[in-house]
Length: 302
Image (tube, rainbow, N blue to C red; front, side, top):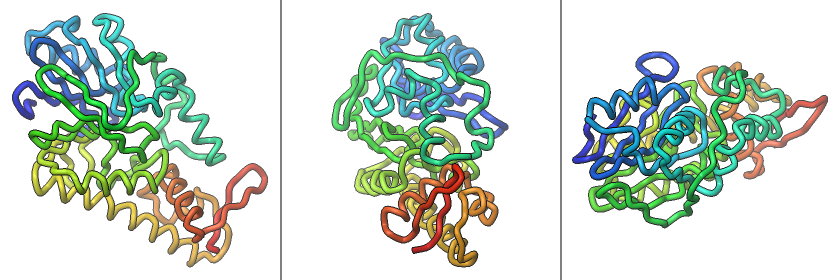
């Protein structure tokens, strides 16, 4: 799917149809990829796309990873092995791609007995370790083919999630940095406060095209334009507010200490990871209290 001249969207099968992971290909003299899907995505979608476009795998010179989760970086190893492309990622997510076990260990340290609901596979490692050729920070500029993108650091979904912004045309590639309603997928892995601040930052940008990592609800599309793009950012903020309100409502109704799993029974459409991140935010705001007992975390209203 061509988004704009030389900028294409590749839909990589993921989970069940119609769900997919997006890869953006920026192509002219060379090919740059933003994300690479799962370990199976190169063979399933990326290489067939390149063949149909009469390009070679060896033409890929750069791979920018929006964040270090396996469904976005899993295909890097096989692509880099053939093309020798330079891998680029934010410094805060560099450790996630070098150590495929790191994210799961970190989440379990924060939330003992966490249920991953198939989001993180028990078949480890989920991808081959990757070593970046370049780490970037907020405000840096990257030349991808004939376009120049600014790196916007938008943490929340992960610590090092980035958006690539081509501000002349208002095109923003955000990966999972903006998640809408999220469905049962985790809205956030890293921090709810950071996620809200990142969304507020994007609200102040002139967004004409918003390229998402998945076809998140409420629109169920991966490419949103103009008013729909801006509405989507508003919906993403609203989703966090609603989740926080629901968590507080359950704690108030039960009026006792609850685990994340017990809270989730009242809101099963949300993942335990998202609920945990919301509880961390509410704790920092002094609205809930965290206690540990017998290796598990409990939460109650202050």
